[in-house]
Image 1 (cartoon, rainbow, N blue to C red):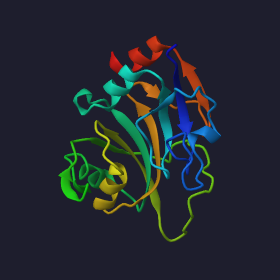
Image 2: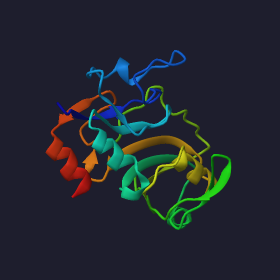
Image 3: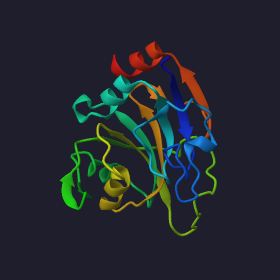
Image 4: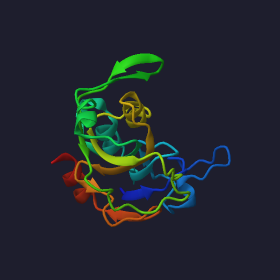
Length: 194
């Protein structure tokens, strides 16, 4: 039987079920059958939407770069980023991937007027009174290793917190870190591919 779950991966949790280096893994939060695995990944220090399934076709369609699909990230950055700063990211920026320069694909960057309503993070972001921060929404169609962090750093705004909010029309709306929601095959496929 094919199973589909969306989860809110907490901060400082590996995107795998196999223990490694004493770090928390998905197994510590999500009781799923042993043939269910994450599609893609989020870094240990990132949080948000991750899909779990045993559907190999879904895995292929989401991870193959030919089927570019939109991902929305909410990014808390150090410093006050304005619209002009955000625009620098949109045509693509040069980052390093596998030790080589790489120009990211064009994206959309939107500055939040006010911080978005997000769950408290544990442990919280270290607050520094003299260093402002701001929130940015980034819409990407690719997912290179640590791409968002590299992009904001290249623009002069290091990432403090990174949440994947959406993949196509699937979101973590209403979920808290550690929450899981089961979906049907038709819900998943219609949200991702239609």
